[in-house]
Image 1 (cartoon, rainbow, N blue to C red):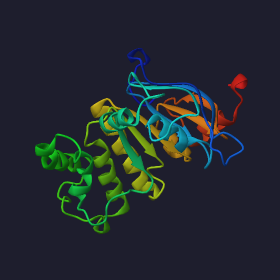
Image 2 (tube, rainbow, N blue to C red; image 1 turned 90 degrees about the horizontal axis):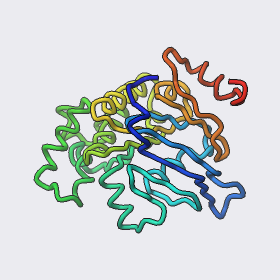
Image 3 (cartoon, one colour; image 1 turned 90 degrees about the vertical axis):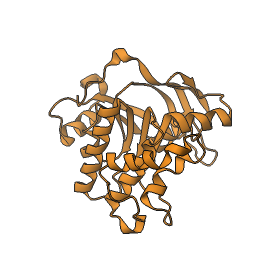
Image 4 (cartoon, rainbow, N blue to C red; image 1 turned 180 degrees about the horizontal axis):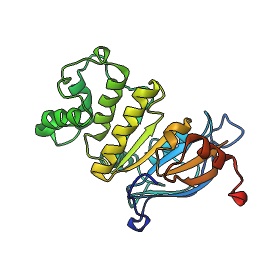
Length: 253
């Protein structure tokens, strides 16, 4: 286990019998998913493309709604909530990081970071908060740089600073190292770890890479929309041993 998260702190996220169906697909994107994620926990959702990782993150982050089942995040029941309630929930509770950085090319790093604050009442705090956010991700002095002037790793750090600028309790990262080389990707995961530890955040990261997943506290494996494994990562766990556990039937572990 890679942190000091404590199950006694209570579940930050609860999913009960969650199903997500899309009309164009024969099989559900998610099928009967029931999981708890604990406050301060770092969980990796692992699976191949199409396994349901992104769909699960979108449901937890209130970017989509389930076909059936119940979802509760930090005491807020998302099922049946209004669009206004879900918008407020996303703004105040969740930070999102994606594989593609989604930075606005014409805006500086600082301007990109503070975009989530435009609709808030924290107008006087925007600039100092944005500068502080860039400093926190190691980009002090890059405030006026445009995205095109930054490396891929630096752009992802700007995206992380933007995700954190509103002080969320939950960070959802969808393949955040997918467009980065292995060394830069490791640096991004190191950064997410340090921020989680500093802020006691709950983190969910979707990945297909066992070298990334093994850095988590727990790995939930998905295949064809179903949970196939739920493994606590032990000290000394390797990508190879993790893959072996995922491939081993529950009864044989």
